[in-house]
Image (cartoon, rainbow, N blue to C red; front, side, top):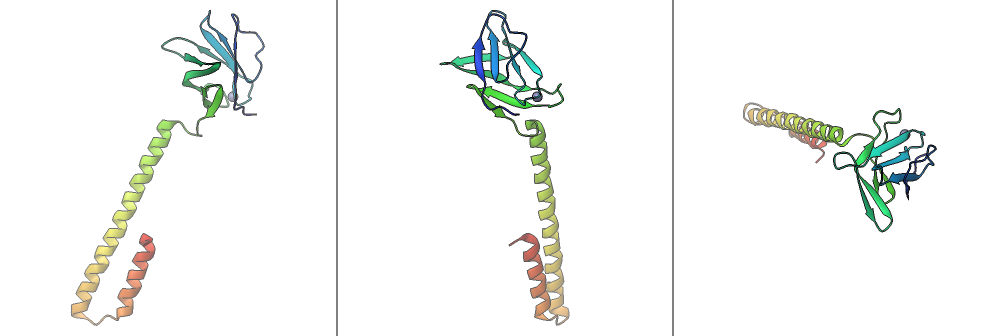
Length: 153
Ligand SMILES: [Zn+2]
């Protein structure tokens, strides 16, 4: 079961059996350990150093930076520990989300381009028709309605 809170426990040594929902911190050995917040039972060791994890303490509340990304475990959990709270990351890493958003935008641009090309060709057709033939007005009206429907306006 996913947890949403974690309790810091400072001790010299990290116990062999970790309890869920507890973040064990050994300042002496500059390391912290906890059981994966997803409930899978895996033990997560976060060495505390400027290039690994940094621990911040504020009136009994602890935060770890950067986030905990358990990519090597089956659960692939990703979360932050901020002020004793577990903040779950979305299903996708941020970089992947950015890629998806960029693709969505590109699709939208392409779609609008198609609509505009369709509009242009219809405008040309109707302009040509108005001089050469007597196209019933309901045809152009129907085309307008179609375009409005396509563009959602
Ligand atoms: Zn897990």
